Length: 423
Image (cartoon, rainbow, N blue to C red):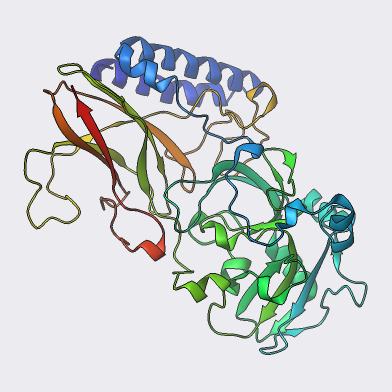
C-alpha cells in the first residue's frame, strides 16, 4: 500500500469511527462496512503473490476441537467413561468446588466451602454468580516449553476472587493454590498457585483470573478441561489447571506449583515471539518470496515483527548471539481480521469482551496483548543459493526477541530458523 493511501485510510477510519460510534447499532454496521472497504483497498494494492499467501492464513480464533492437547493423567481424565465422569465430579451436574484452608500453612477462614459440610460450590451456584460477575476475554493458550501456541479462544468465566471471598478469609492468606481431578492418585496430583494479590486484583489492566466454563461461547468440553477450569490471562498453560476441584488458601510464602519441580520458572508471564506459517517450499531464483506468520503478543506487547533472510555462504554477525546487528526488515502486521473464526455463528463475537469496543466489536488496541497477530512480508528477489530465514518480535519498549528473558524454562522465545533453498 502506498504511504499516501495508508495515511488517508488511517485518518478516514479515525474520523469515521468517532462518527459511527455515535450512531449505536447502525454505527456498528457502518464501521464493519468501513473495515471491509479499507481491507479491500489494502488488498488491491498488495502484491498478488503476498495476498494469495495471506488468504491461506489460519483463523485468528481456534475452534475448540482444534486446540492442541497436552493434558496430564493416566488415564487422561477427559477419556473416562461418562459414568465415571459423573461419579468423580467431571460433569456439570456432579461438579463441586471446595475452597478450604491449607492444613500445613493455614489461612483463617470463617466459612470454608467443603463437600463434607455440604457447602461446596456447585455448577448452579457458579451460574448464579455468573449472572452478575461473568467476564470474557481473548487469550492464547501456550505451554511453557513448546514452540507454538495450543490455540486462541474467547474464554468466559467468573473471577476466582468472587468464590474466594465466599469462604470469608480474614487473615494469614498469602497464596492460593488449586488442583483438578487426578484419578484419585496422589502421585498424579498436578497443581498451580498464585499470590493472593493476583487473585484479588487485576494489575496493569489485565483481565481477572477466572473459573472458566465456556470457550468461544460453548460449554467447556472435557477435553478442554470442563466442566470448570482456571484460566490465568497472562500466564502459561500450566497455571490454567483443568478439571478444577479444589482451591486451597494458604499462608505459605512461596510458589508451590508442581511445574516448579522440573526446574521451570513458574511466575513469569507470557513472552512475545514470532514464527512462520508459510514459506515457499521451492522458490525460484530472482522471484520475490511471500512469507506469512504469527506472533504471540506477550505482556510486553509487540510493536514490530521483523524478518531476515541470511545467505548461508556469508558469515554471521560476529559475537552477536541474538543477531541484534543483522539487517532485519519490518514485516506488515495485519489488521484485526474481518472473520474471527472460532465457530461463532455469523462471525458475531459474544460481546462484551474485555479489551473490545462494545459498539464496533473491534479490539480497543492492536496488537491485542495476550493473544496473537498475523504478519506478512514480500522479500525481494535473491540469487540461487542456500539461505536461512529468521523472524523476531520487538516489544513495546523496543526490546527484540529473545530478550528480555532468553531462558528456555521461562517460556519459549528462541528465534526461529527456517532453511530456504532458492533454485
